[in-house]
Image (cartoon, rainbow, N blue to C red; front, side, top):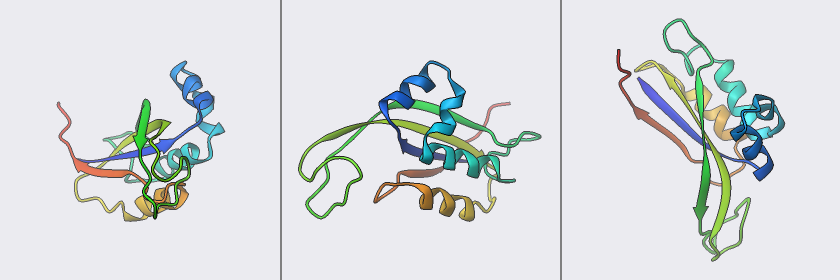
Length: 125
């Protein structure tokens, strides 16, 4: 299978609400809700067997140092920034064409260089 991981910046409030299990917070962040909408609206991304719209959320912090030529959404050139981040992970069948979904996610993402990972995994069972 293909695995897709999208790193989404969120506010500390949204992160705390999600960590507390408040699923409604998904709709309260523009980037996160856009990524989820792409997955839920796709027949290929988020498809595992008879299930659609499958995704998982991972919570954490992300750090980076923008260089002089960067145009960061958060932070300033030359200074380390740390931002609350939610990683949205989903799956698609091996060989499935997910180019349109990846383009839609990238278009909704605020970062100059969105972190969208695509890899290969095997599900047990």
